[in-house]
Image 1: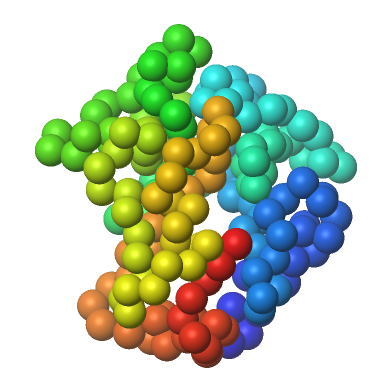
Image 2: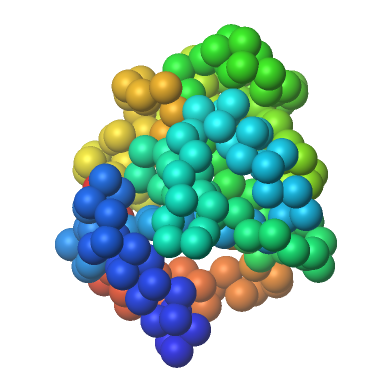
Length: 193
């Protein structure tokens, strides 16, 4: 629980400091930022900007602003790629991959999944991308209800780019403990905008 509070508390502080981020849901939780330690900050700013973000300085930190999320970039070495780690990758939605190609972003389409692809940062981190034509983006809660939090994924993005998700991979049966934690945080199990 202490770890969860350490992760969520900074996000809530970022939310109150920058009103352009997504509003917190009914439990007070909102996605605020991603943080990457990179060898070449300039190359990463160029990549994230080509993806559709806007470079900004927040205090002494370099960041790239997207709708509903900031990507913070800090100079330094890192211990390895996130592929295979608990936070495996992040994902964004775009109207189509064509505009990204025009800005120099190479998207490798995922065979068998129309509208789904990947690109990589200069550090080699995978960024998953979904375009509006993606056929596997329909979300419905397990009980079949339709709510704003899931239905927003079932219609066109309406922006040049929008943060979609971060994908957690937990070992073995740890997913059960993770699910239990989320249900304690959001008792009805539904996360809405």
